[in-house]
Image 1: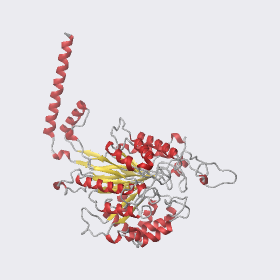
Image 2: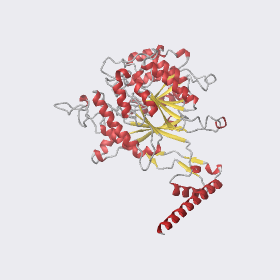
Image 3: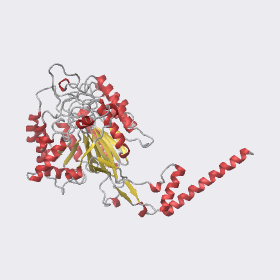
Image 4: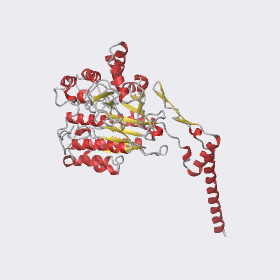
Amino acid sequence: MMHSEKTTFSSGTMVYTLYFLLLVGVLSLLSYSPADKQIHYERYDDVDGDKQSKSWLTSTQSSLQQVVAWSWRSWTGRRHPVFERPKRYGYFLHITDLHIDEEYIPGTTVDSDCHRFPSGNNKGPLAGLLGTPGEKCDAPIELAEKTLDYIAREWRHKIDFVVWTGDNSRPRKRKNIYHLNERVMSMMQKAFWPTARDPRHIPVVPTLGNNDVYPHNTIGDAHVDGELLDFYARLWQTWIPTDQRATFRRGGYFAVNVGPRLRVLSLNTMYFYHKNDAVKDCDVPGTPAYQQIEWFEHELLKARSAHVRVYVMGHVPPSPKHYRRSCLQEYVRIASQFPDVLKGHFYGHLNMDHFLLLDAREEQNNLHSNSYVNDTMATLEDSDPEEEDDVHVTRNVGKYVNWLRDMYESVDPIDHKHATFQRMPVVAVQVAPSVLPVYYPAIRIYRYEIHDDDDRAQCRHSGKKPHGTLMEYDQYFANTTQFELDLDTDLDEAHLNYQFEYNSKEEYELEDLTVASYFEFAKRLIGNGFEGNQLWLKYCRNMFVQSLNDDFA
């Protein structure tokens, strides 16, 4: 008898539940109208470096809709599909060049690479608690930990994915490089792994840096360096799609979807890097560099066919200074032929906040023959073979800045009458500053357009920009020198907070981050008038993350 009552009660409960869900569904349809789904969008604000807590999305809904939405969520645990809020903009993080060194010791001498305490009359500069801006030391592991802790606290729930462009370790022996990358991987998982507050699986897209391989700057194909490629394939298997793992094991590059109709291509720029003697040029069939170029072009063709937008990323940026001539020519040739698909180029390696403009037109197709490249590159070569060709705060700064200015000046105007939807003669490459405090540690947050149906003819004139268009970025930095001066507790207990530096739209009046906007910006930068000079000084101060402001007063 008792069993029968339980059965009756259970059946009755199920009937009432189904009845309620049916009623909610009917009410939701009756109360739904397109006007009710208009959404007002707000982006976060920064005031004096502190983010104000604002909802990024606010919507107007009728009272009945609100009741229906609440009821549906109470019974199902999910948002009603009618009330899913479409996002107008997406956000992602670019982080690069952590350069952690487990042997870094605060208070040691810079001359010892921040490893040994001073002795005798040695009174040179000493290592700081979270790095030593302006010196040649790598970074303590605490800087990476506190940076990722800050990102997890302040940005994890706001971003869609992460672009992570390599150089995680101080180059020594292979086992040390593996160990340091394992430590960084653990930090990244801790920062971006699903949580109860944010159960999303946030895509993190890694790439190999020249300090993540052994010997330094050197990696061959799978026959030569299969062990190294297998190591990173296992280490990053969480973020490398199953169908891309064979590709990665073959060459250290892969493709991954990071959102609806949005894909990131992670290149192994070591195959293009002129210091890597283990591979041949990009115009030699069958070589790793040639195969990656073929893969790069094939991926863009597939994306165009599928109406997918693409970002491309790597460690070493494409430039006459760093790429083999054939590899630079092939990169620019391909990138210039897919402006409808390829919406952004993201790189690190140089520690400075700047952008490159590469001209793909016929008269500049042989990029290395330009006089400004030959003349400037000759002055940039360092006589010390042990020194890396990266630009450091203590050398080459002025020469590199002059080289950039010459690059911007040399690019001819874009003829928009002949620049088609599927061809843009200029390629804009963004180079982000590093967490490694060559200057001050820095990270970047991008905002991009979400327009999932922009391939439909009736939606192309909606007032939105094409899906994946980069709209702007916010640059953040940590003044570690001031942090150390203000520290009033144990370092392990202190939080490092990055502060707002500038916004690309407000600082540079960039409407968006398209090639056309960067070209116009470059021409304003080289203007000879007062406004051009002031803009150039501002750009240079930001380039070195406010650490060399006195040099560009």
